[in-house]
Amino acid sequence: MQRYFVSLDKLNNIVFNQQDVFHITKVMRCRINDHIEVVINNDAFEAVIDSLSPLKIHLIGEKMRNNELKNNLVLFSPLLKSDKNELVIQKATELGVTKIVFFISSRSIIRLFQKDFDKKLDRYKLIVKEASEQCHRNMIPEIVGLLSLKEIAAHKANINLLAYEEENGKQNTIYKAFKSNSSISFIYGPEGGFDKKEIELLGSMGFSLVSLGKRILRAETASFYGLSIISSLMEEKNE
Ligand code: SAM
Image (tube, rainbow, N blue to C red; front, side, top):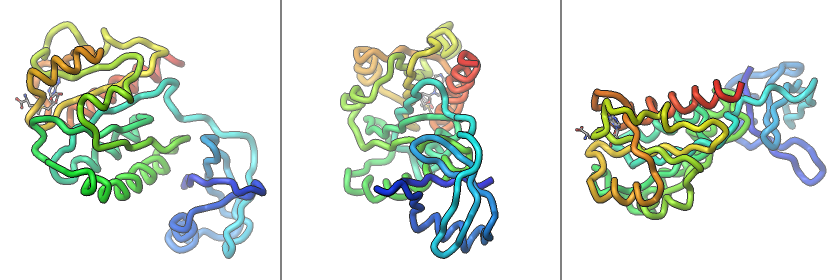
């Protein structure tokens, strides 16, 4: 069943945004009495369509299962080449992140000014909304950027993990550094990796080095690999 994020007006009426009205009535061609899911203030409900123009629904049953991870998961992501950023945003959303923070690092191939990043932000916000609806999240992750490495400190978690390929194959893995019931952040480097000064800076900011295994992963693969482990550990430890 398709899920939509809605809001309430001052009279507690459910309000859809225009793109969603179009999606429900023209793309999905829903009819009266069709069922959809809506998320109101992070709670999900099943609903029945009462009228299409204007679009009106009524909720049925209790709140649905909450699909969020029990703790916040923050991804610090370098700006990557071409549309890899969009793929990272989509997969990070499916893996349960609550915030994606884009940062600039010395070896990033892409150099963007804030105004150029702001132009991309609208598209990134649409991708994160659509991914949240598709995977039935109870919230839409926040996207922050474009920050320097120093500025990301404001978004750190209780446990902050830095994926570093020079540690590859050593003992310090995500499993070892993971603490259940903690908020976690995960940072990985761009196509050119982090330079030694950046590794030292992040170490001084409280990031712990972790290995993602013996092979050198592409940047985007590192984000999926790291988030998958953390997300599955969070799911398991909180069952
Ligand atoms: N030094 C790499 C190389 O020789 O190609 C360039 C960096 S790698 C493409 C991009 C990022 O993925 C790294 O900065 C690191 O954060 C992460 N990464 C890749 N493989 C890793 C591994 N085996 N262990 C930890 N992090 C890894």
